[in-house]
Image (cartoon, rainbow, N blue to C red):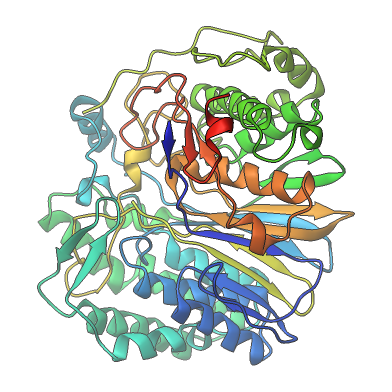
Length: 515
C-alpha cells in the first residue's frame, strides 16, 4: 500500500561530538560548545538550552524542557501525563531507566467496572495516575544539580504570558475548550510547589522530595481527588500517594558491535531488540537501502517481534515476562528461519520461549468496546537522556482550579483475563512510549525519541539501521522515506492485527513497491 505512514516527530542525535544544538525538528539546528537539546517545541528546546548555558547538566536541561513541553505541547503531553526516560551516566558509563508511568486505580471495584464495561478511550476514567511531575522531580533529585524552581522558571514565563482557553487533543485533532484560563491556574500550582521547596528544611534532595509530596500527598492531591469524585472518576488520593517513579535497569541487546538500550516490557521497546537480533543474521547492507528485499525482510522481522510484544509484554511487577529467553541466542536462532525472504507472512506468530519452540498459538484478541512528543539531551560532560513524553490526549478537561490536564493512558491496558497486559489494581499499562540509546564501546552514539504510537519502534528500528548499516548521519536519516505495518494488535483499543499490511512512503520508487 502506498502512503505516508511515518510522518512522525523524531529526535535522532549523533553523539560522537557534542556541539550545542537547539532544534524543534530536523529543520532547525544551531551549534555551540555545551551540549545538545532536541524536542518537539521551540520553547521547550530553549528552556533546556538555557539550563545548559547556565552550567546545568543533561538531567537539569531535560527537566526544564519537559516542564515547558507540558504547557506548549498540550494534547501531546501534559503534566498529568507520563514520561519514560533512558539516562546515560558519563562517569559510570551505565544506562538506567526512570519509569515515569502512572498506574491504574488501586480500588478493586474500579477494576471490576473496567472488566465489565471496557476501558474508555478518553475522559477521566481513562486517566492513569499523573506521573510526569514526579518523574521530573526524580530526574532532578537523582541525576540533576538544580532546584525545581530553577527548572520551572522558563515554563512559568510561558504560562504568565497566557494563551487560549483550549488545547488540541492530538489523538483526533479536536480542540478541547476548557472554559477558563488553565495557564494561570497551572502557574499557581507550580508556584505552590516552589513555595514548598523554599519552606522545606534539609538538603537539596529533601527539598525536592517535599515538592513531590505536596503534589501527590498534600493539598494539590486533595484538589485532584475532589475533581476525580466530581467527574465520577476512580482515582483517589491514595493512588497519588502510592505513586513512585521507579529507577530500573534497561533491557539491552547487541547489534553489529553496538549495544542498544530500551525500557523494560512495561513498554513496547524490547521488541525492537528482538527485531535487531533476528536481522543480524542477514547481510542487510548488501540488500541495499530501501530495496524491495530490505523492506520485506525488516517488515517480516518486526512482525515476529510485535507478535511476542502482544503475547508476553506487560508490567513486570505483576507478570513474569520471559525477557531473558526472548533475547537469548537460542531463541533468536530458532525464530530466524521463520523469516522467508521471498514470501510475506499473513499469520500472527508469537514464539514459545519457555519451551524454546519457534511458534505457539497466539492468544485470542477480541475487540474491546493521542498524542506524544519527543526529547533528547546531551551535556558537555557526555551525560545523555532520551525521553518520550506523552499525555495521550484526553477530553476530561482541566482538574478543577489546579490547571492540571490528565492523559488517557489506561486505554493501553486491556480486559482480557489472563493476558499479561490485563488491567489490575495499581498496574502500569504496557505503553508504546519507547526512547532508545545506542552505545559503542560504552559511549553513546545515538539518542532516539519518536512520536507515533505503535509506529514508534518501527521508525526507531529503521533509524538504527540507517546509521549502523548505511552510515547515515541524523539529518539524512530522519528525512528518508520509511515503511510500516499494522500486522499487530493495536495498543489503543486493542484492534485486531491487519494481517499482511504494508505501508510505504510515497517517495519510495514504484519499481520497489511492485517488486
